[in-house]
Length: 71
Image (cartoon, rainbow, N blue to C red; front, side, top):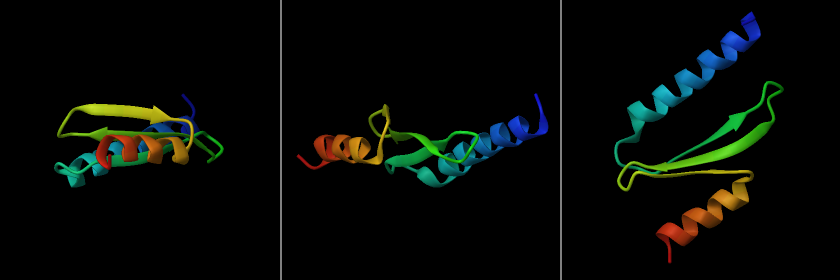
């Protein structure tokens, strides 16, 4: 593993740790980026229900949230 890949891995772990520390029972939403900095997917996790999902776009994620929580 080269230094660049290690830093990306560490960044992802750190991001998930910060989300976990600040989340409580709120819906958690975050984006994952590829090694070039482009958003590769969007994640959503609801700690109250245990539901999680991964989407290819922010719009798809927003539709899922609307359907699940704002019917």
